[in-house]
Image 1 (cartoon, rainbow, N blue to C red):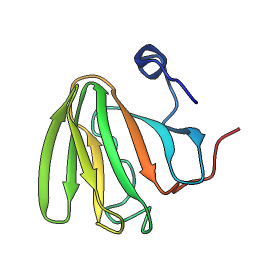
Image 2: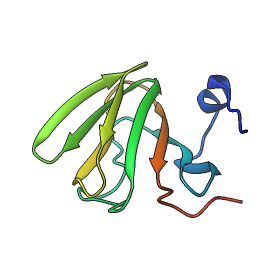
Image 3: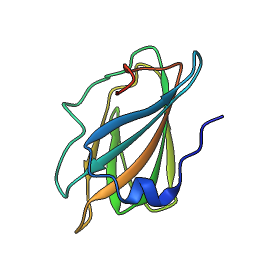
Image 4: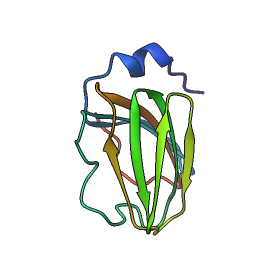
Length: 109
């Protein structure tokens, strides 16, 4: 079992950090400053679904040709291989909790 508190996500300063992985699932956090992108528009995890939940702030998520504005407590499911990009959209840093299944990234040390 692994546990993470919302406060530890709120206090995170890392752009992207893998917290825990099992053979089937991965838990990570991301912090985006206003206007900062998660990366180029595309798919960074072609073999893993992603559930992204906003813990603090606002983000704009572009999935294929659709755009969604999400705030604290909102979630979105991005299917494996869907082209997407996440952008900080508020006046302060946005902090997210990301779940991938199966794991998509190497675990941070």
